[in-house]
Image (cartoon, rainbow, N blue to C red; front, top):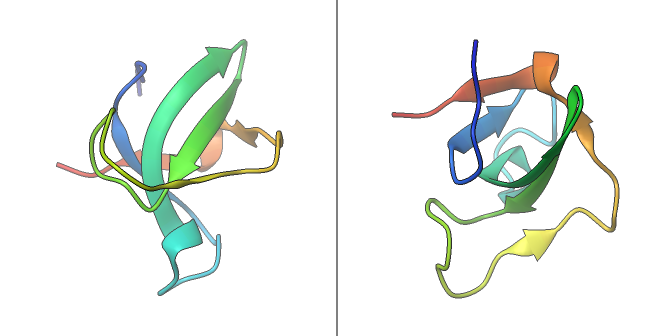
Length: 64
């Protein structure tokens, strides 16, 4: 699957039912992505950054 900055994604196995379960891709570095959690589109107010920790692209699924 191909991802791009701004995609709304679910992080598989990441705190189901919490704000940390999904967000938007802020940056892609190789096979890792930095996520702003709890938002559905870039520039949306709020959101939680993942404390500088990236997640593997293989653990992401796009949310339509």
